[in-house]
Length: 90
Figure 1 (cartoon, rainbow, N blue to C red):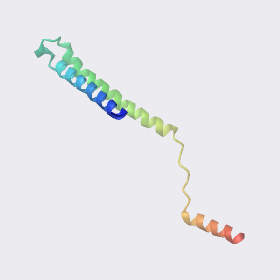
Figure 2 (figure 1 turned 30 degrees about the horizontal axis):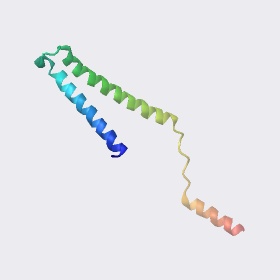
Figure 3 (figure 1 turned 90 degrees about the horizontal axis):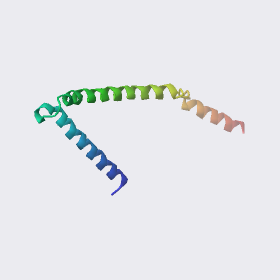
Figure 4 (figure 1 turned 30 degrees about the vertical axis):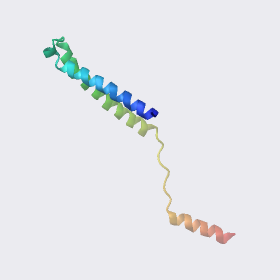
């Protein structure tokens, strides 16, 4: 089994455990769990999603801020003319 398959299996297992926990927390009052579990089952994913979106925006901004501007593009014809002129001079 390759490393990628092992990582995929771990990601799947963690996601499955989190999904089961989320379902249990969401239906907490019916499963005789403390009622505050349902509040956290709603608030925590929203909190994580907001942080993830803001993190993506910060990453995009950082990349745009630290990336140097592109060099101007020269037209191919000018390069060909210059190379022809240099050949004629020699």
